[in-house]
Image 1 (cartoon, rainbow, N blue to C red):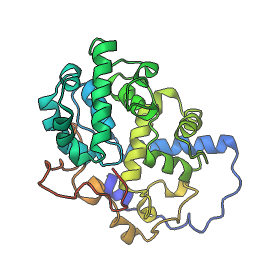
Image 2 (cartoon, helix red, strand yellow):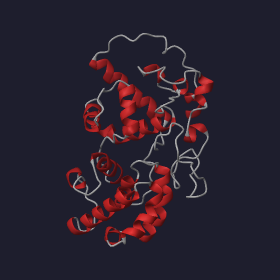
Image 3 (cartoon, rainbow, N blue to C red):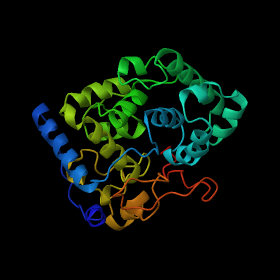
Length: 285
């Protein structure tokens, strides 16, 4: 169903001039986009493999400036060696750096992991806290990482503004802001709090699969008729369909252990598919 919907011809939006939009009309359009994305991605989920809040926290820190796939290919060895904050805090920096080297910026990331693990051990009894104000005190943890952990490990609603979410929020006309915190605030004012976490997954999924940074697949986009930026990318349906990524393009997703109900293929371990994590648009994840 998702594939056929994504391939639907959408001739028309490119030639229609849009009238100035009221705030109410924008909110209604935004919420309709969310409903359409929910139909397209009923299986939307965090694309990092994790078993507990500590693993999700570490994986999210590692995901900066790389793909979730590369993180997922790296963390099995990492978590087997350092399964708890106490054990990771006691790691030899050089050994930790070598394990996480494939994720890039490994020295800075190792410092963050050592620092946050020590802070969890010393200040939170070895447990990941479930409050944003506590999470952001940890080394290497900002609002984006905190919202990922809160929404997916603790069930606390949050909007995760990564590069994909920010790009689509602007393309959809939800905000013109560039600063992630301002984007978060603007989008939070549009949607009910109960929708924040799943909205984040759906928008990020769409950004990775259809609405790419450099070559958005406008002609294969099921929300094109609702998008004021229609026409920035390829509008021919057949050509646009060839730009679809991950399960919509018939290729593996980012998780080695995808959740039940994911319609695509599991990704391969590190070394089995060198370079598979690089996006066609050159953007991480």
